[in-house]
Length: 89
Ligand SMILES: [Zn+2]
Ligand SMILES: [Zn+2]
Ligand SMILES: [Zn+2]
Image 1: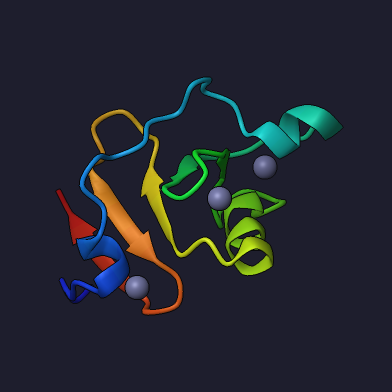
Image 2: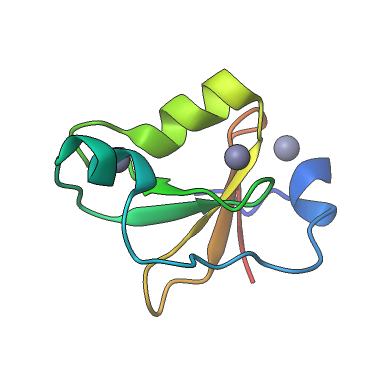
């Protein structure tokens, strides 16, 4: 994956971490998830694209919030949907 930095990722100075280690949307409907992502605009914690409901991607498209971070322990990266940009931090 190319280490392209976009303006959205460059604008992030403080990484937002999950308050609770659950997908907020899956928790409401009793669904399961694989990995967690945290929206860097509103702080919502949602599930990844390997999860059945792909809530992080749905949230990004519905809200226009561009950047998510991995909420997995040991993973330190950001991803921007509109630019398809990925950066480690
Ligand atoms: Zn971007
Ligand atoms: Zn979910
Ligand atoms: Zn958001």
